Image (cartoon, rainbow over all chains, first blue to last red; front, side, top):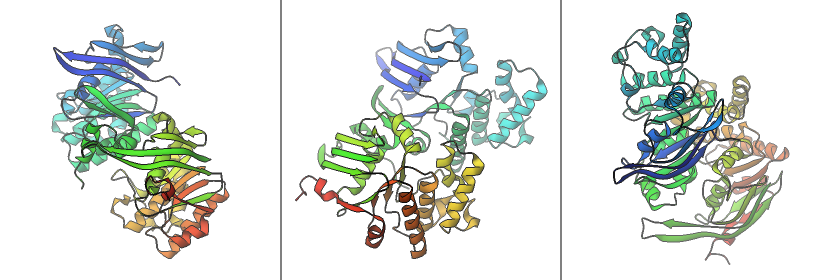
Length: 256
Length: 227
């Protein structure tokens, strides 16, 4: 089987400081990979390099495109990469307002991505938007409200709907449940798991919450100071951590 | 179905002055299809450790652990995931679920991820929950608020939803009343009859004698304790 995403030797430097370095992994269709580490460990830098938001200083990010197979997204022309960003990729930001347009309606937020890939029939766009609002448990009566009128959890769910409406194959998530209270977090996790299973999505999830990765991720990568210190099956890394830093991380979790 | 050859395991506690604890050495065993073996030994002798190594939860330092031809000791994560989806079932002592997901969905999940339709998976889940005496009014609720015995039965229902050819059972009858215990033992026997290879830990001696063909004392695999 061809991997959906093949990451080879990615490095990103900020002057003399290391953003991330020497990162290698393959992600297969349907797989969810978690990236954990303390703040400043390079998780988000890596995610942004993978999603084409930052240009890595070294290495390649190969994506299995529908037409040409594996292709390096770092060196591909900008329009092509932008097209991927609108179609096969999705990016869920930690702060929903970074991923939403706050001054257009909820329906417009979902519809924009559809229009970007060529949908023009207004009725169809609206019914697709209603369908997706329903899937993320937002009442359809709120379709014409602006996201500013939504709670934080609803904004996050709207951002997910906007991202998934075009049927992407790969979703990047940066702390998708960060800043939400626990009951909303649980709903969101349940929703994400269901969507990953039903749509056969692959995902890369950056978080510092070990409970979140245990429930969502098949595989786990632990980062510290820009380096990958440990990788493996999620429950293996959490139950039998090998590296000193991972052991510290796992043993520092407060028991409820 | 399960073949373990000369397996060893040690833990290094980096944050506690890098203490290295050797917990297993020279472990070997073989379980053919349709056989059930019990791991015995005192607390701390490594029964659960061995089970977790077979499931791929714990890394193996050396040796081979073959489950249906896949060497868990050195397989890629995605191969282990594939193995767990279709071949290797594990009923742990504790239920770990996403909050807010209904009991019915928790039990149906192993079937859904292997491609069974929602209707068929739900029907199977219903019959299992009924058999294990979980009242129907609880089916739509999340099992997180259930009693210990109820949670364990939900866990068993989930573990037996898909007909895995290899199963690991960690004290499946520990907190059950006599009626449910008998049901669970019957379910284990049925699994054996359809050719499932089973490794179990049973502190319940009577249950062990009823369903296990052999016992393996893991104390023999513990360095420093072996006679």
